[in-house]
Image (cartoon, rainbow, N blue to C red; front, side):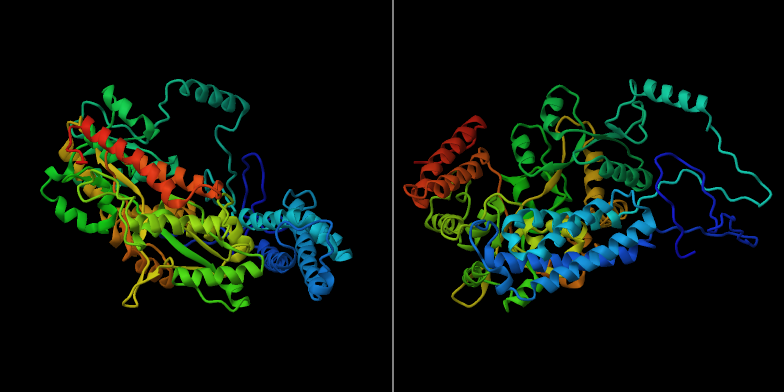
Length: 613
């Protein structure tokens, strides 16, 4: 069977695999073992999806050609003479309309005229009818046109997903009548009553089976992300870790912001994973998490990771966590648009500024939202550092740091880059054919932007050309870590768990399980370099990531370090909103005073040496 359709129903139903005249199929099976394999396919929807995808590609091209003349916010009282400037526009609109109408007709034949999926396509078609009659109306409807095109792209994402939930598969002889147990009204009422009763006594934070408290070597593990991730983690623990070591693990899904309070109340876990990168050092100074340096094999274990991944988890000779994920910015680019504009992917910031001039002439720009990772990119490429050698003072008042901050601000003052709008959406529509964003955006685009699949790629971020001709494209990284709580009585068992969890084999299994469950959007940004290589990256994308990995630097965590980015960001917004009076140098150096005061205060609190004036 190449395709058998299961039509959507709100209730459970018993379906026999049957021909169109409802005669059940009879499949002859010989004695022995047989395998039943089912795979979700598009079936009759494949042609419809192909037409809509082609239409969306044309509509995006139309949008880009129009905004090159009108801009994204045209003057509705101005005559842009769109018809004269774009003589092929009417043919493009008719072509897109023909594709959409064909998709609408096919969808009605497959799903019926009452399908909710028709609404988006009909709305887009009706707007095309309006624009075909009068192309000059683009100035009045350009905003809604963009929204409708985006809705068609989202439509593609939703239709491609074809979920099917099965409860039971019956295999029976033709002379047997199948009956479904517990399908009576009374059985359903009894089930609902039981469900209500158990809702009062079931701990929904607990994942999977629970080991008895009397059992020895039972770890309590806190997980801070989603339930799907927690279920996969529990499954891997039961199948592998517990079987191999005999150490039972109770997994709980919790809000990690309660970790310190729970620990102080004696209700904390033994091990916590997927914690933010600023947590281990701050908790470690308060004797809340264990210094992993006490374990003899730590030097061997840290070789699994890029050295930059350990930066945020070490302080003053202590190591408070092992890295679990590591992410950093990459340069995403639209192949089709760069080809249209006869542009190449920029490798230096000087080339970026030239590219920005070309894009500006075509009513486009580069997308780069302000963030600590972006600032760290400029800081490290200019030779700056966050703190001095002994981490007692901020180094952001150095000449290198001031120059980096000035360059960072200029992109938003002199070049007017957008500070708020989602770069992913603007990349998808073509308004920003170049964006600098965290490399996990790759996962989102793979799933949420099927309309531009194959039309984009990514490369290492632009850098600064040095005197020897090499390009410094350093970037700052962030990520999640895993810790052992200091109050735990099972530290050795907790260490065995951390070693198992961060191993290449486990991280590879976890990554593949997540992708099989949730698709490419759930690809894990593992910090284990061997596991990272085992994930299903296309060769060109993997090479680009590996190239950028060689220039990744960590962002250190120090006592009072939370004041650093907070004040840099405050200085940034002062410069970019008060361009007449605020200068980058004065604004940053004023904030460094606050940063140093907080660092000194915290070092005194923890009885650490302070900087000498």
